[in-house]
Every structure is written in C-alpha cells, then in structure tokens.
Length: 560
Image (cartoon, rainbow, N blue to C red; front, side, top):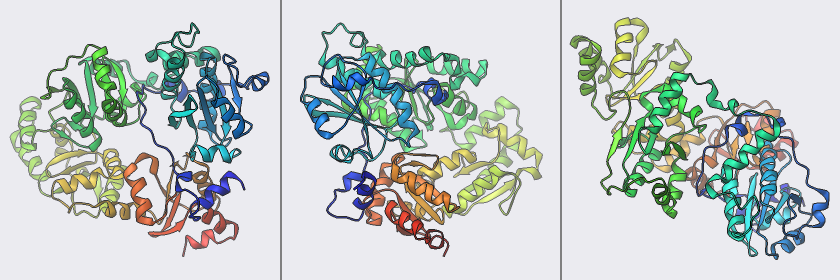
C-alpha cells in the first residue's frame, strides 16, 4: 500500500491514528527574517547538490559530511544508535519548497560535518514517515542520543539553520570544525551568505531593492528609533488585532520600554515594511534594529525565556511591569476620538470648522460608514466593490457616501482622516482602513470581532465563524497551504482535481489558523485534511474527491 493511499484511508479507517494526516506544529525558538536571496532568486540559481555516492557507505561514520538518502527504516534506526546527532529531511518530488530547502540542507551538511544528514522521500518511505507522523513537507526531525528532540515544518531556512546549529554545536562544543566555530546567532546568516556567493547572485536582489531611498531611510529611522520597536495594527492602548495585542502584552510583561507604529494609519509604511524586513505580516517586532519576528515567535521566545535573554544581550533595560510605550506613528494617535482628531487636524492643516463638522457628522451618521466611489449597487472601482462585498458577507447594515459626487468631501476627508485613498471604512466613528485592511480583517475574523466589540453585531461564536467560512464560497476547500503552494500531497491532489474539472473554489489555509484547524475537525466530525465542502455540506477528503473524479461524478456533485 502506498503512503498516499495510507493517508487517504486514515480519514475513514478508525484503526489508523488521525495523527498520520495531522502536521506536528512547533514554535521556532528564534526566527530571523527569511533571507531575501531565497525568496527572490529562482530555484535555478541554486543547483542541487547530489549526495556523494561514497557517502552512503559511510553513513554511520562521524565527519563524513554530505546528505545521505535513507534506504530503509532499519538504516535510519542504525544511524540513530550512533553518537552523532542526526537530522532528517522529509521531502517530496512534487513540492518546490522541498527542493529549495534541500539546497539549504546540503549547505548545512557541509558546514556541520560531525552531524549526520539524511533525506527521506516521504511518500516513498511510508514506514519511516508514519513513525515520525509526517503529513506535510518539507519536514525536519532533529535527533540526539537516539531520540527526537525537535522538529520543524515548512520552508524556513533561518529556523532550520538555527536548529541544526543548536543540535550539532551542543554535541560537539569542543570541536575545532568550521561549523562549530560559528556562533548560534550567526549560523543562519553565514549559511545563507554561502548560497549567493557560490551561485553568483548578488545581495542587491532583495525584495527591498525597489523601495525608494526616501522610504527606506524613513523605515530605517523608525526601526532604529527605539531599542525595542513594534510595527502593529492600532496602538498599545487600542490594538486592532489579537496578534498585536498579544505582543504588546508580552512586552509589558517583560517590563521593557518600546516604541510602536500603527501601520493602519500609513499604507506606505505598511507596504514598505513588508519589503524592508522581508516579512509579509504584522505585527513585526524589532530589537536594536534587527527583526525578531511576529506574534508566534514572540510568544515562543517569551515562554521559554529567550526573549528576556535577547533583551539582556542587547542591553535593553527592564523598567517595570508598568512598561512605558511610545507611539511613533507620524500621524495623529490612533486612540484619539474623531472629534479630537478633527480639532488637531483643523489646527494643523487649515480645514475650516464647518467642513470638519460636516465630515464628523457624516462619519457618525451610521455605526458602519463607507466612503466609496459610486454606490453599493453601482461601485465605480474594484476596491469599492470589494469592500461592499466584504460587508455584505459579514451581513452587517451600513451606509455609504459617494465621494465622486462631492469633491469637497473627497479632498477634505483625506486630510481629516490622514488616509490618502478610497474607499474608507469607519466603525463607531473610527477609521478602520481601506479595502485591503478590511479584506485582511475579514479573512482573519478580526472584522467580525471588531463589529462585536463596538456593539454593532452580537458576539460571534467559534461555531458561527466556521459556518461563515464554510459558506463563504459555494465550493470551499480547507487545505494545508494555498492552491498555488499546497503544503501536503493530499491538498495538492484535490486542488489538481478541482482545476482539471474547471471548478471555481474558495480555500482556507488551516496551517494559518490553529483555532479553525482544530475547531473544524470537531465541527465536521472529520479528523483529517483536506476537507471539501459544497454549499455548506461536507463532501469529504482527498480519497472521496479522487473517487468522484475517477467516476466522472465530481463536477456534477459540485454543481447540483
């Protein structure tokens, strides 16, 4: 029986452990920004290193270097009985991320010759994959003294380098090898540098290279403005998402002073920071000008004490539990009321009192107010259309104002709100943002939560949220990864089947939200992923989708 078949049956065979199709999630200890070179350079720039043939014969020898392909579970068990630490890379030939991480893995094997590096093709070695509960690739297992001490799921070169350096350096602290001479903090940096140097690429090809000099300088000044700095949604007194709120609470608990910037108030900074730091989400936490990471990394480092160590290493003083915070948003403080903002702006921008009063009345004319191009039934731009669709999906009542019908309001509101574009969404008199912010909050569930917090709608239960997600598209797929970048073979096969049949579908990456991931298994009474729904009803997992496809019934089932 193939590994793929084994996993497909796991969803319906009660004799098989559900863990076989469930990823092992871990929080990285410390995660630096992903190397721009790995993200921006095509895979062809990193030619694969073939395992040395003679290396297979020396698999158990310490100092052999290189990556060995595992022939059987007995071979791997034999290696684990040795004194050397063992690092195993589970990969798949269909996964581009696996292939790219394989290049990093090969370089690390050369850097740390006293550790043993093995590759296992997950679907070709079901016995080994089952033993280590592998369900998504790339996946790494770190072993020492015959037992697993750590794991890593996903294409994260920095975390891989850090974990390899830790397990290898701990075992051979007294060695004079080049690998162990690397300090922990520099391990990923040194390894990543070797990739462009050996393949003729340049550091100037990073995603931040297309930032203007003025914006890059501004962002650098913000990052360096405080020893600890947080780019977040909202401000420390009023976070606009739970992830930002979590990091703020962590920093307060650590007792350190920190500056912050509300990225919702400045779209140029918001989009620029994604490229500047090569980090696609917020919040972003910096210490002495270096990116520490986002919410999950901050939580992990706080829980294991590494965040406190980091602050100590960088000389960040611990003030008290009543941490002082400084909002460095170059606009007005986002916790000011609309009236306070309008008064401040009137003084600084020259808006007359009559216009400020009119704008204030418009903003507060409805609990949910949209300033848009056109009307809800006839939007005049794609962004306005999108925000209307979002509000309709949230099933919330709202009023709107067509800014194309009144140029005084159109120009004045940009100054009043200090937000340069349209549409603009307000709730309870407070600016939420434009269509991109509304879409992000809608997908994460924060928009509904904000509506509930402001008393505009009733509190949303987890079950309600799952229902809304399931019915957000007639055909809805809950999968590992995205349709363009599946994170497991079964998700990839379902995506391929739907595309082959020409079926439009929505999707949700269950790896991005643990609450949805665990909650949906209970809600649907289906323990594995992917899960395919049609008009709110569960169709099944990979095995059922493939059976329907093979019998010619898939398209008809999803169009009844």
